[in-house]
Length: 423
Image (cartoon, rainbow, N blue to C red; front, side, top):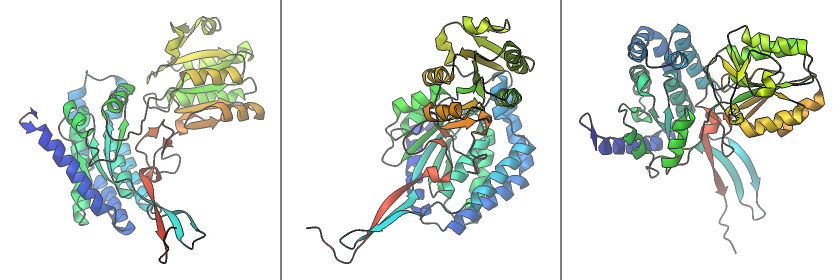
């Protein structure tokens, strides 16, 4: 199969084999060498800021009128975001080496010494949508953990991603490291992605980061294990015991500080025992900032500004915009039941002063991050001290929540004996 005179079968084969071969070389690189590469990435990012912005401008002009405001925001690079990429690379470089860590050790009765030691996963296929900064974040994290990575971003960000991948390649080559440790897919064909997803002979893990449609498509096609980053249907429950000033500030931040991200609040749950004046404060703080509110008939009866949400199944919806759902409940138990039914298992928050309410919420909400009297916007690798993240896993196996370098490691058992044989 060909596209634009490119043989996709041959191209996919080259990408997969290059990643496998590079993974063998970089898994034994010293911690100092990996840190040096990442430090150099930061330097080149700052030095080549004009080139990055010029490439990004091409992407933005091509996407104008085709993408909504939230997607355009994700696509946009500026001085602050480039500096954030550079700082992220430096932070990851400075991390304690995640490889070679002895996770546990003991001596067996037969005298064999056994240990479990952190090692790279191997080769990672990282698929993401139109956020060009993820090119650097994903490459830095995978490389720090000794993994080769194939990066496949959205076609809208291709010029930006090429520029950023070129910067990483420069840092690798200057340090004498195989540049195939980081490969960027430059063909936009969905068929190519499907081909790579079959290459479990060369690739060890797939991380899709994007909308639910993308992730489901990857899961359905892949022969390679997938760590899923599903959408962020995040809730904030305001209990009757809440400090209303805290609640107002948290709702404003969780919904409006940045609306197009996966850790933004999409539904506010309100205890119906809160008095009318304070309910009005909670609604006002969102509506006054341009947030459209949607809810069922019960919610609408509390405030005329709440529009009909339609079927209750629409509570399971990610807006990524100045929109939010509103739900009224009798207590924390009912709030947790609503979250269980409608959450994407990303991040939920409770605003309450009652310790028993806090404890019930923490124990019963089954999401990757649970906040007590804090905004959902803190669900982020940088905020957790991970430097950056390749995504926020909503899975339960291997990795959960913001995925930093340790989430990109596996382990192996090492046994040291003195001639013992099993009887």
